[in-house]
Amino acid sequence: MGKLLQLWRDNRGILVFLSLMFVFRSAVADWNDVPSGSMQPTIEIGDRILVNKMAYDLRLPFTTVSLVKRADPQRGDIVIFLSEAADNRLVKRVVGVPGDVVAMQHNVLSINGEQLAYNQPDEAVKAYSATDGGSQLLNEQLGDIIHTVKLAPFATGRDSFAPVRVPQGHYLVLGDNRDNSADSRVIGFIPRDEIVGRASSVLFSLDHDNYYLPRSGRFLAAL
Image: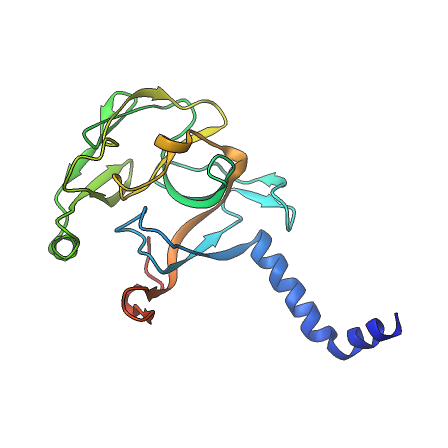
């Protein structure tokens, strides 16, 4: 016991700092490494995204217990959730909120009977597509949010599903890389209490295909 007290006296400054940092990362904000391309081109492999853990709930630190509900996820939000079905921490985009009827036909989404608008992206995005094996990129308008989705140049069997109604307390999420994402088409609707935060920007990014060199152009990039 004496050694523990001495350790505390000698290092209490750094120990308090570390404790506060862990609490901050647990309940306020954190960063999340992205190891897969399921959200390309919005989020690249090697991005470290900033996660606002207070966007929807004020939670008890080191738990998923919500003390205060602050807001609910909206269509277009990029959310981080602890998926029991996938047994993993995932990052996807909210497409359907409770009560919505969502359908997809050949990668064209309809929500509550209204088809989303799609158009061609700008030249910079087209240049990205040219270096990515011929994938097609389209801008998709989801409410007030316009984002780019990536479509495979070949049939994958994931481009269509019949109308489904999102149950209360759940959300339908999809990856922006529509033909290469294990999302609600695979793991089902996402319970509200599995969602732990919202992502809106990239902190920094490392290029896994180029010796993990920094991608300076993606530092602090908005999502």
